[in-house]
Image 1 (cartoon, one colour):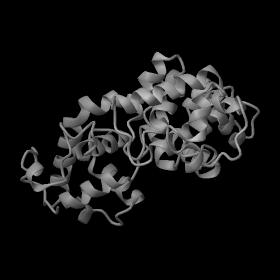
Image 2 (tube, rainbow, N blue to C red; image 1 turned 180 degrees about the vertical axis):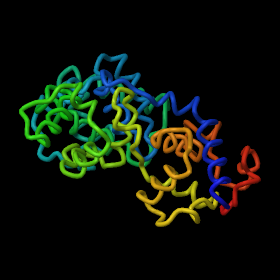
Image 3 (cartoon, rainbow, N blue to C red; image 1 turned 60 degrees about the horizontal axis):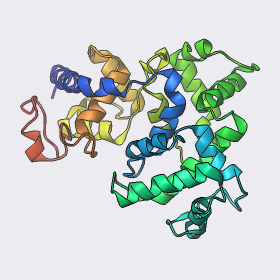
Length: 299
């Protein structure tokens, strides 16, 4: 494996997934909805398939979902399985019986339809993900007028030592400033169920934000790709910083974030991507790859 082969492999992967990863782009004006849809699409739960049920019932909004916990107190914001771990649990009976308002009843109905009609996968921690969504939306509804955008702007203003910042000021910051903000504030820590990787998934495709073009998430899919192809042998040290330096050095004709998304998509074995992609996971799938003759196939 040499750098020329590595460049050909990576360029092929990013070019051939472009039609898909371009669909990931979102607008800043939609970030509140993106927060709900992406923030809790975890552990195999198809939140994106649950969202239309919320839309049909008029409660696909942070404010609406967040208001459910405002209707009556809860003993703890932590997930308690005996309280909220199934449709027959006390919390869901409260929703069903109208004790948490019309939004609660509609939320219960959406959950019932999702389960009864098998609209999507529940994943491993379905009830926990729903609880995390309720608590995080309640936090935003209570403290930031039901807006994830306002939460980000307020947190960035505090980082800057200002009372407030505008949308334009936030979206025009540089990549280094964004990294400093994340390191200093760690905003995901104030949102139950949202870790740094999920936070990146929520905000990383905002097309108006220039600072994301050169961001890079050294996730498991990217690491797997570099190891299987043999490219990792060229990267020293094989970590986030070393990988960024390597990609900049070999001059791939895409921004770092685009390379990042292209590799992730190419290797993804999720329900959404496995039909078209899912490469680098098995030798049989490997034979369908257009650069298989260059790859080291270390599967």
